[in-house]
Image (tube, rainbow, N blue to C red):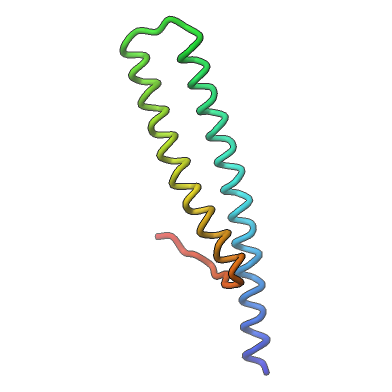
Length: 92
C-alpha cells in the first residue's frame, strides 16, 4: 500500500514539474517569436549594408533553430503528460 502511495506521489510531483516546464517553454517560445518578428521588421524597414543583412539573417536562422528545438521539447513534455506518464526529465 505504501509503495502505491509513494508512486502516486512521485507521479503527482512529476506531473506538476512537467506542467511547469511546459508553461515555461511556451513562454520562452513566444518571446523568441517576438524577437523573430522584430528581426523581420528591422530587415524590411531600413536600408542595411550587406554585412548587416548577413548578421540579421544569421540571428534569424539561430532563432529559428532554437524555436524548433524548444517546440520539439514542448511537444515531448506535453505528450508524456497526455499519456499519463510524467516523469522528471533531467538534462545533463
